[in-house]
Length: 93
Image 1 (cartoon, rainbow, N blue to C red):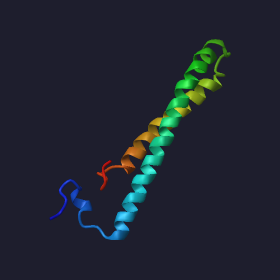
Image 2: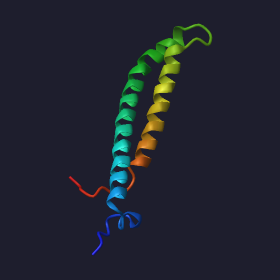
Image 3: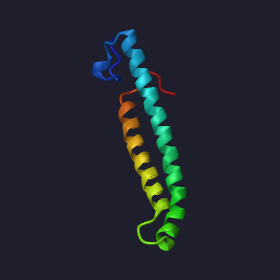
Image 4: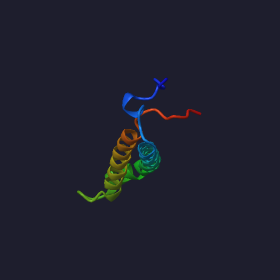
């Protein structure tokens, strides 16, 4: 009997398809970890961004731009990593 907790499109897969799905999920996890690191650095950069916005002249706010870039990278990598890691794993720990 088929395992009903596995999505319908993954129930009848060849071994090569299973390997491709596992690689995709592994890359999704890697991107989620990198996203977490960017998020952590974005929080740290927030300390310097406030000072940069207060004391830098006119439109020269490099730390603010770095913070926006880090936060954007965290969101994009997190969403794409979650997209790649979709589905249920065969083994639950």
